[in-house]
Image (cartoon, rainbow, N blue to C red; front, side, top):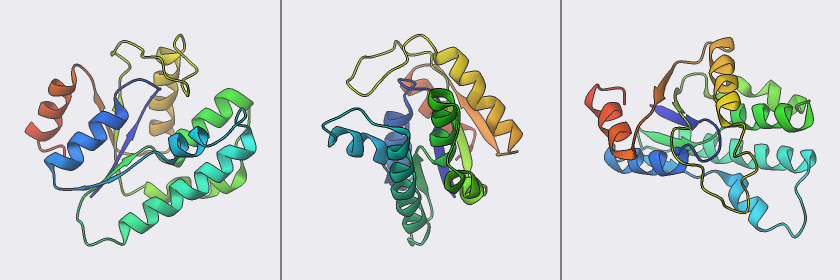
Length: 166
């Protein structure tokens, strides 16, 4: 099974995806945007989001071919779509055409109930609740199966692994 960890920034997605990958002996697929943006010596643009999306898509498609039964994706094209529309008002058709590439995945929507932590790539300390509602609305719109993860990291791991969500 493939699991996609999604939600607003600083909501514990990366940490949770990595911990669940370890707990399930799964493959962890990192968020490519972090690597890409850290290597830019300028502000990113909407054109950069398409480059990021194509690489994220390729990484996830490669993971799906793996013999590993579980993959934990730290983001996917839905996240890039939401961010592109939120920040720029539009989304590239290439991304929209491939939104269903993870439709057989189970989404973990991370609630932003952690304290927002600054890092150079984060932009929205004040819009996390609004973005969370937008993520949930998009998951429902596309009829993607999902579960909300909330609480501490330990509570999230326990809840996700205890009830056989994963």
